[in-house]
Image (cartoon, rainbow, N blue to C red; front, side):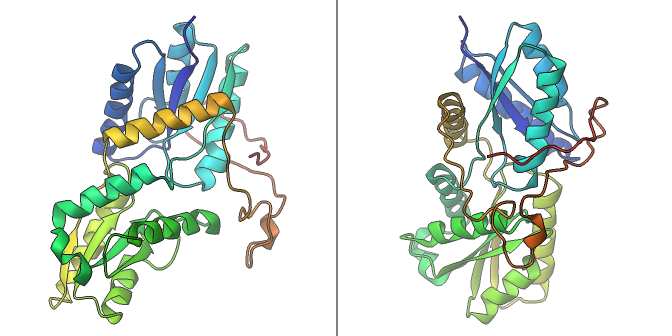
Length: 295
């Protein structure tokens, strides 16, 4: 009997290079797990759609799935959109079951990758005089933004850097120019912009443009830009860890600062609110009904 299928779920991107990086990563996982059905799809914007990935696995005999969201933080996609998409797939394919894994970060494996990207643009002997600006995607969910700040702190610990600050490229403050300016005002004369993104895409490219634009007006600062994390062995092993967790029911998701459970200042209206995932035009069978937020 084959083990449950590993289903990798991505949000999607309009950037073809980013979408291809996802598809290549899924193909690499298939090579790592020759005896396990492996598939991957997007909930919007990029092929293959999640519905096609699930249909292909079902046609090959899969009935039980462990879905791993290929996202770094527990924001709206992980809490609402992807669970809703899995509910639709279960309804499309009677007799199937889906276990849902937790997002990837924060995790020591990601810190290892981030440090490697830092080393690619900064000799270790320069760390003590260098500030890192870790740039995340940004979210309207304060819990998700806090996870990025936690990663920044963990990256700072024990690595001999002058400091690690945080910025976001969309939906949350500070943005990239503001984050860089904060570093400068704190005395930084060398800054490394470190994107907290798995693969290339529209948002990482925006980070690069904004950082380059800020640097043009601050020639006294040595600004360096690191690459996205990419499809490393550590990332593949982390996905397999999340797969095994999902199968064992060992999810350990944090609910202590979730806006759907705790009255956070400015977000009190979200406590107990139903999740209403936004419309995904690539899924013609999308249901507009509400889906409850479930951990």
